[in-house]
Length: 452
Image 1 (tube, rainbow, N blue to C red):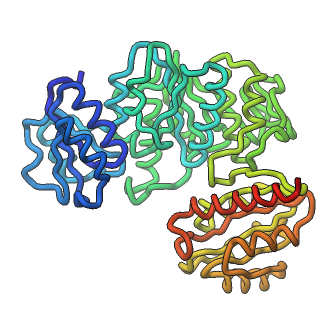
Image 2: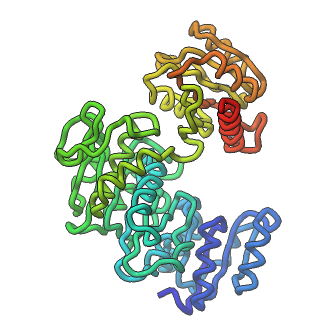
Image 3: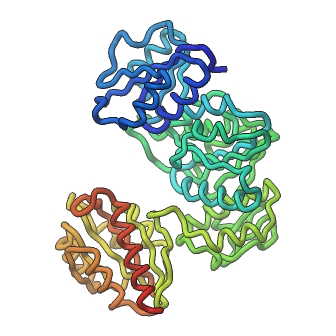
């Protein structure tokens, strides 16, 4: 399969690069097309692929590039589903797939595939599942997918009976046909990517494609409290298993502060460092995958107790002076900060602000029950101050995070949460929000060093 054929890859990025390497090594004629000009691309990767024999067409999508001489069109997941080459390929009878579908078709025999999707929580669930299985099975376990590691990039490492834990995006699911996870997880569904798919109904149908090739021998792990998940999985052929954060069910569930698996207590909510009920659900989904593979309870509990979450997303950093610090720098909009604020039942000092782009901070009003102080930073700090004053919450204003961090610790007390969840982009001071998050984490590290 995929040998001595002519293949057009639409879109460079990581997936296009990895797919091109795999295909050219299998004796295919590979043409890679991307609308961005060559000077804006990764020069080292271009040089590497050119030396291997890949042909490039940069800067446009020529009308005469795709013709009946091609055997496959491999589309980058981010390319619109109605791109002219996609439509032309269908007219010409050329199969349209993506890099992950291509890589899946090249798997060795008996690789166990775990596919994890959902509107929210899939990165956390994928990361935690991988960490648990890695501890249980060592180098047999591989991490891939939308989490930043194209499936093609691990092909050379895969051996028979290995385990792949893969985060699966809706854009990837759009062009899957044979992709068949032995265990498939859907964390939840809510409106998203409407601009890409045209409607929520289409988006839900695409998400449910993760189950389309499963059989009764395969397992679907589902959030029983999400109505849309239940609706979209009514007719799937898989063996369904459920988790719930609200009710005691025949599956995995939260009862008080304890998590049970079919009636047996596995761990306590107090064992979970990552905050919020949504993360309790993510832990339950990961636990259920692990139990399908007979991982001992002790391994699951040990990994969960040390898991700090996905970096920069409500990430537990450390506890210093009795204060717990959380880095949620990727909360660049109001909705993410709403989720963060609703994740704690302890007093919170929250750091808000950054790039001025007209955010309505008053949309945070219903989520302030535990907020004891607000630190306003960045370009929009004056509007944060106005919001805090209206809500009658103590507020302290600083241009820079460094000064705001110091004040946040000063006005906090043991037992408090100090939370960076800015509800704002970082571009007023930083090239990217991850730099802001690393700065926050370094301040925590420095603070801890002074207290030894």
